Length: 67
Image 1 (cartoon, rainbow, N blue to C red):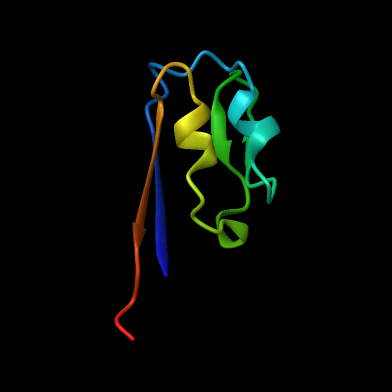
Image 2: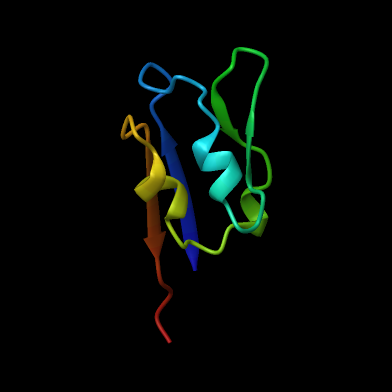
C-alpha cells in the first residue's frame, strides 16, 4: 500500500487535532507550528487526520497495490 500525505501549510493553523487523533503518532507539529509527517512509514492510511482537520489542510492518498 502506498500512502501519500498532502499538507497545505497555508491552511494549517497548528491546532494539533490531527496529531492527537492519529492512532500511530505519524504527525507532529514543527517549529513553525504547522503539521508535518514525522513517521510516514508508520501510517496505516486510516485518514483520521484528514477527517478531523477543521481546516481541510490534510489529504491522504492511499493507493492499494494489486494483489
